[in-house]
Length: 251
Image (cartoon, rainbow, N blue to C red):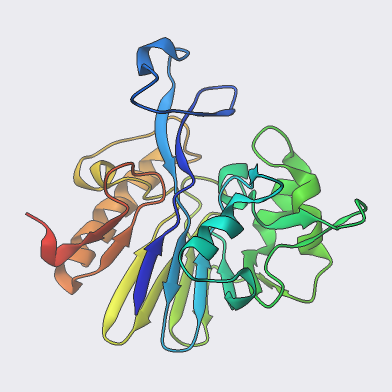
């Protein structure tokens, strides 16, 4: 099994929910609007015994006319058509921006991974399409309603092909889900925005931007303790310095 962080870069985001690129050699955080958060945007690829999994899809930004996420995958030797499953924790635009791309004729959109199955909570999709901007970009998500590649999950917890488990937490957002992947004796936990950064796992922290910040804090405590006992590998989508954390490396 192989884990590949696919970083799209470091950004600041404030109450406007706009993601502005940040380069520590050029920019100063204090010059950004008050309350700005410094975050990495970092989908992950996991190559298992039978699948190439993509965990969340980034901002959906383009560079030189093509999707940055596609370019980043190819730089790691993975063609977008090789991806077999796309696992979506939730549909906020920084996690779901790379779900779809415009058709070549300029009319409509198609899913950005032609051979993959997309796994998303149906309640999350309905919520996103109803709520819309600025947290969700509905025109990028509509295709999820129409494609046979999409598996809309309805249960609060369950399994995908026996080796991936999912659970709806309702912590960061009302229908946010987390994933645990088991392969070749290893256990990987991806908590999306319920568990976005290493420091939030180590310290009791209630985030004002969470739907239920207290629940998110308590869940992180449970996951951290269980991960320590069972030697989980944690993936942190928004961590600038620690995208992958193996508990046997912890101090």
